[in-house]
Image (cartoon, rainbow, N blue to C red; front, side):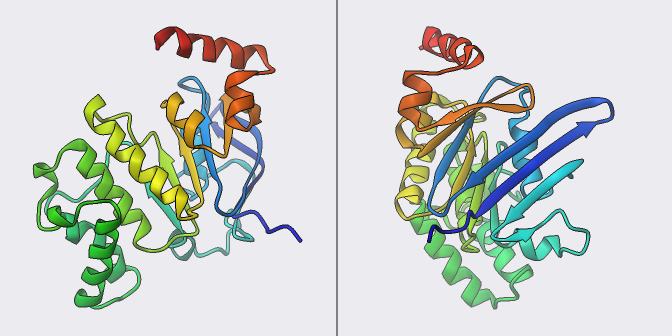
Length: 248
């Protein structure tokens, strides 16, 4: 019997007034899978991602996480979010807390762990992203790449069933992009389930199990990277990738 999807979007719609940004998204993400979402700006990628943990409220359809429809009114969204990690474009670290403090915070505030236990688990998460030596350092003293790796440690410390990445490298300089992508590859190898909105086409092609191309609020094409990048079927996909290849 096949496993159930960790994430299932069914007929997902999102509108801002009269502007429809998601127009019926159907998507399943399976345990241990890395799915990369690509597409032009304004195609609905980030809105879709943010609907997956209700940072944005959908206007129609279902978001089912590990069998629970989180769009239901009676769902405790704070409990649900403990199982959904989120890595943001702009890091969103607390400037007055050290790297260790940022990673340990949710363990103490959400899960009620003692300071000692939270810090032990936080140090283990920092070790996974290669930043044990920066545990006592404040965000202002970190490079962009290091700050984003702290953000990843903060996401994985709660041992979520799914991590959402919203353009995790777009705010980084070219020299530090690689260190963040390396950590993401390592997480994939450990079996972490990941939904990644990215403009890093080389990463999507090399690391993803499946690639989703979105445009105009719909999924235009999806498949294994070799198929989407090597032999796209839709004209919109071909045009988008032609621009990407021209920029290489």
